[in-house]
Length: 300
Image (cartoon, rainbow, N blue to C red; front, side, top):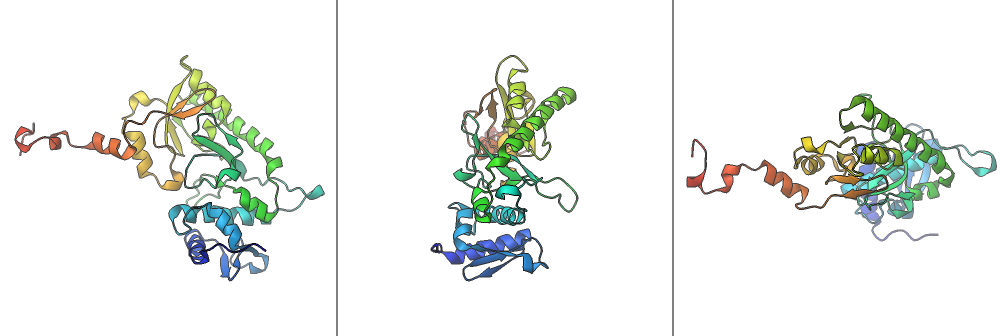
């Protein structure tokens, strides 16, 4: 039997916060929680120990925003996997909501190194399995969230056989995204088929299309949020990428600096200033940086 984590109280509070704020049906117990998909179907709830929930936060404070989001995604993934029917030979069919998901290294949703299936050259993006979320109350498509490897292990599910089909779907969506860019000509990347902008950029075909379209072999792409990307940066204010990233909710945030995309890599442009400093500098009143008697304004 595994020993419980040292600070069960913080883990308990973080798990309860995830339940209340994200409507996850669960009930805490002395040795963990019981969790399910519906509040009124308690006979179908399953138990989760504190040790598994400690793995879910991957070292983050359970009461922090990052810890709460990781607990939310872990619990939802565990419930989804625990309900999968077993097929012949003990294997499990891939859920229809399973998709590829690319996240920046250090992103609040990143569930840890054991989740990573692919590492895109350039050191910016890690790719693993994600789950598409149901539409929100206004029937808007929501971005996918990670399916943590530790949740699959706790549910007794081997997700490795799913990757071939998931990667194939990601490449098909990358091809479709490249076709739409040629057709629309708007210079804006949008999610497709459950794959957000960063996930589409993890697909080789879209990277090749962007990098070779103008004959240079490299393209600068702004993706401050996971739901939008811009590659015509000559028309964008330099402060936009950092300011837009800072203004975006952490779980929806993309990358705070422009990306340099080649057919094989996704790297980061050199950071001269932090996104916050660049935004402050660009938006500052030029007259405010001089002495009052030198200000080139009508009224002082």
